[in-house]
Image 1 (cartoon, one colour):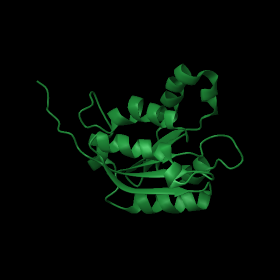
Image 2 (tube, one colour; image 1 turned 90 degrees about the vertical axis):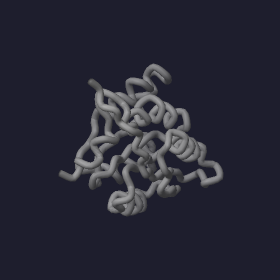
Image 3 (cartoon, rainbow, N blue to C red; image 1 turned 90 degrees about the horizontal axis):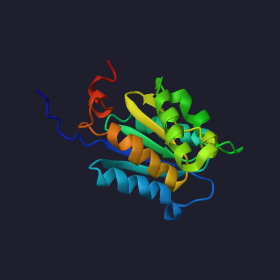
Length: 172
């Protein structure tokens, strides 16, 4: 006997962290929006901010406080340069980290870019019942994360388990 689960569209925000891009040049943010919408989810809001930990934290804090937001996808600021501050900005907001996401992302990335994958500080977690995924800024990294990890986990039909069906129980 199998239980039939319907697709549950989620409301997602996309934040691009960049000191050099504008929305017109934001291919990573554009990719994430096109991908989430193609898979049946809704874009709740989009933003592009410079690599400033306090501005990043303020915007993501607003989104995770909004009951209508199910998840946040952040692209950029996860590297090692002096301005890369996404982990420092957003890790303090997480109630629970999802270590398996970063580990899996780097393992998959290793197959694509070799040892350069160790430079990624990609991570994910849960903040106020909202999923937060922080990805590198390259479009190819966003594609890898979405197509090989996030898409399936945000689809309630994925078996044996997925993040989407946990949503009602995240604040228990």
